[in-house]
Image 1 (tube, helix red, strand yellow):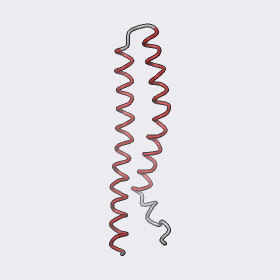
Image 2: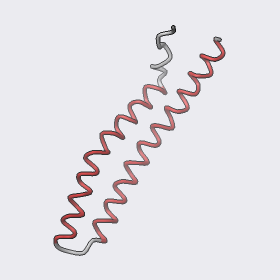
Image 3: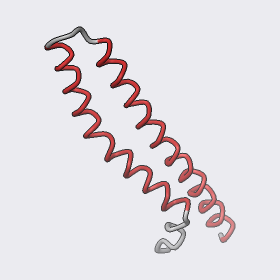
Image 4: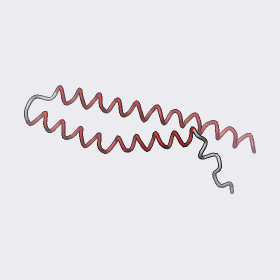
Length: 86
């Protein structure tokens, strides 16, 4: 049974690194997409609408990515190793 707990803790650490990398990649991807979409939009009202849409998208998803990064950091630092055992 101890082996199973040890294995789960290692899996949590590996997934923590994955969550942290994923959060950073997602933010960079979203900023790149926003830049590309806004720069490709035609001048005038279409560009303004596209810019407004991407500002809203970034304001919603960046805090989610920050939470994902924090969750990954906790998993990497083994904060979840001492969960209650039934």
